Structures are given as structure tokens and as C-alpha cells.
Length: 213
Image 1 (cartoon, rainbow, N blue to C red):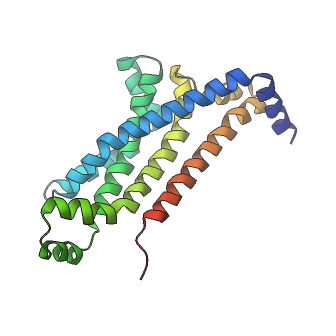
Image 2 (image 1 turned 120 degrees about the vertical axis):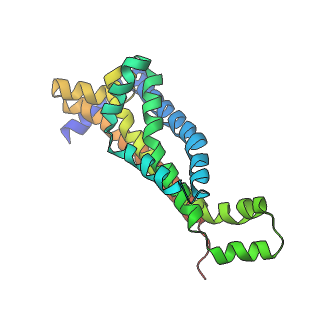
């Protein structure tokens, strides 16, 4: 309890530094997630419609998961230099597997009978995709966004190692100085942000799920 009280006192004594770190962390996470959604969800759609190369592409994207987040940052660091941009691109890559795999799975798992019924009603391929497949696949796709968002928020802590700032600055300083107070100042907000993302996207996932009959 003393460490928690000390952490709260630190935030009260240094509000500007704390909220600046929160802002950087949220900005990094949100922009990386949005960029990843724009790029990787369409890739997932393409993969789901290709029976020949789709499984190979999914396996290739899934292989990115074996690369540690910190290693990815250090790979990009010599190319892009220090700062937020390098961290953002690393987080972008990190989000790829969850988005591609879930988009592919969601679209592939739409019942063939439902698709054939829609075509029998005279729907075009585009109408079947936009009005049948996408709505039915959305809960699974949002599940991928939920997973990606949590991975990004947690991994954004490591951005501090390449000078990108964020809440990771408090955590790395706490580890270096063996200061539990600073560790909590960074770790508690990161946990709260991850829980918020889980709650928001988890709720959206349940709302979009088709009713059970």
C-alpha cells in the first residue's frame, strides 16, 4: 500500500509529465492500431478469397508472432532511427497476425448454405460479401482487433527503449533505479488502458454477434 500511495503522490507532484506520457502512449497505440486495421484487414479479406495461396499467406503472417516485440524495435531502429515513428511501425507489424488470421477465419466460417441461399435470391457477389459475409464475420474480426489492441498497448511500453516516450519511460526508470513507485506509475495506467480496450472491443464483439436461435 505504501508503494501505491507513493506512486499516487508522484503523479500528483508531476501531473504534466504523467499526462504527457499517457498521451504519447495512447497516441502511439491508437495510430498503430488504426494503420494496422487499414492494411491488414483487407489483406485478411484477400487471403480468405484465395483457396490456393491463402493458407500459405496466413502461415507466413502467423510466423511474425515468433518475433519478440523488443527484437522488432531493434531491427527497425537502425533503419528508421529513434522516436515514435519507429515504435509505431513496430507496433503496426505486431498487430498484423491477429487481424489477418481473424479476418480470414471470420469470412471462411460463414456458412456455405447461407451464401448459396443469398445467391439463389439473386444477390451479386459484391452484395453477398457486403450484406451477408461481412456482417456475419464482424464479431470474429472485432475479436482480432481486440487482441491486436491489447498486444499493442502492452508492447508500447518497450518504445521507451528507443526514445519514443510513453508510460514505458516510468517502467524502465523504475527497473533501472529499483524504484517500485515509478514502476507502478507506468504499469497501472498501462493495465487500465489494456482493460479498457478489452472492455470496449469485447462489448462490441458481443453486440455484433448474431442472436442464438
